[in-house]
Length: 190
Image (spheres, rainbow, N blue to C red):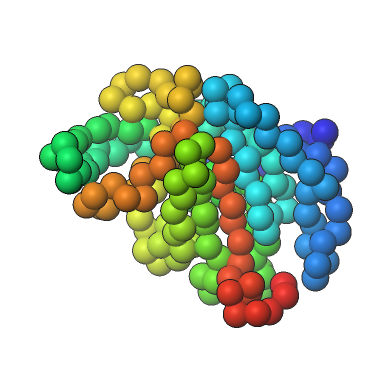
């Protein structure tokens, strides 16, 4: 396993990854990243996809990034409106720290990237890069490490999408964040 250090905002984040191999189109891909079943209990999540530095990120790594706090309300059908306060880094900062493989010559190239977030229970949500990028949608989506002033270490981080009325994209116990170009949707290889 190798440890890479990358900068996200003003903080350094260490991403742990296994050796990389050359994938289709010259993109570096992980040979393997083994996430143990207990990963969420230990606060680890996998960051994968079309990235220069895919790997595992700990709760401590997430806390090393700039922290944001948002208050959200979800209108639940069964229990009415629920309100919570979450603190954590922006999903954008977590993804940027792993080095998405955008074409540096094309400003809008990042708009063809998708960010998929998977929870321990199989619940998942997909966001577009443009939705979370400050030059486009600028939605402050968080990877929450605290909820209502309590650490989430025992449960793993949560995906928090401010502005969602029913909380359908709220993901508890995040185990993976995958950043991918949309080329596969259109039948093209990267």
